Amino acid sequence: MEYGATPVHEEPYGQVLELIVRSIQVKRTVIGIAALCALASASAAPVSAPLYVSYARGFKAGGFNPGDITAVAANIPFAPEHVNAYEVGVKSEWLEERLLVNLAVFRSEYSDLQVSINQITSNGTFISLVRNAAASISQGAEFETRWAVSRQFRLSANASYLDAYYADYLNGSPTSAQTLIGQKSQDLSGRPTEYASKLSGSAVATYTTPVAGLPFTTEVGVYAARRSYLDPTDDDLLQQHGYARLDARLGLESADGHWAVDVIGKNLADREIRTFVTNQPTALGSLLVQNQQPRNVALQFRYHW
Image 1 (tube, rainbow, N blue to C red):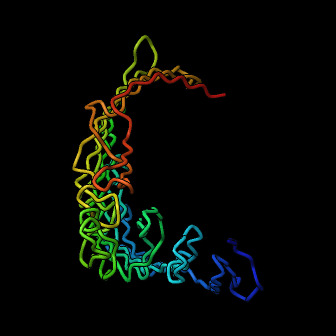
Image 2: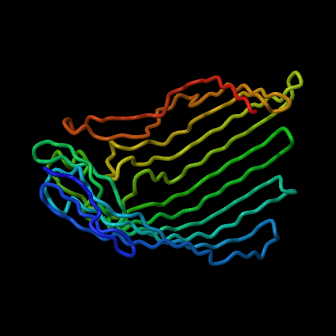
Image 3: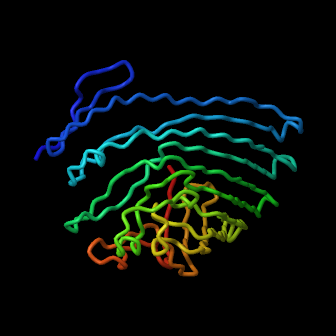
């Protein structure tokens, strides 16, 4: 068996690569163009609230699945991914630049979206491949604000609404339950893409006051998100339910800013927050899960030369 990817010859816009897997030869010329165009930057409001409009076209290069062991030529290459991205927003400052408010509305249209899928072959071998979904849409709105209420007290917050779904994906990988009944694929058109929580946001409050002549800071933050799938199959077993994570920090700093000591608390409400989950290939219904750290507290010392 022979594996490898070797440049065959140069072309004006890329290389032709030759990949040999089990005596199957696959060639592809990779050509890509990426562009960003700011269509307008104007404002009918005061100078502190400029409006912007932007359009961007980008791509992610295609490639090969060298780990595939099926000897099926169609499993080896995957195509480039392209996106047309549109955004309209406003960036503003108010109250003598003590209050910042930013708002953006966006839409991204993907073609040949690259998704990672897991497959189990007839002999029970577990393989991971990159495939192309025909099309997907990601659209929504983002809000950000920072407010210096006083010299001692500051607030910041951001929130986002995201509607991300497969516009056309007829041959998506099956869920674990569908695999158990012998189903080979599913129609995911109209279904959410992975890691796409409809609503998410955070809020942080910071208060600084002198203690024994040194700046003492208290900070509390909350990050929250609604449910999202952690796998492109939209398997109900492979998702993160809605949660709110509470973080906090106490910090004491020298008057000249050279050193600081912080007590940092993460996930103080001890929520179970998944970062990765997949099925066990030899025991469908059993999961391999990776979580964020549970409740933890750390002591940090910083020094600036």
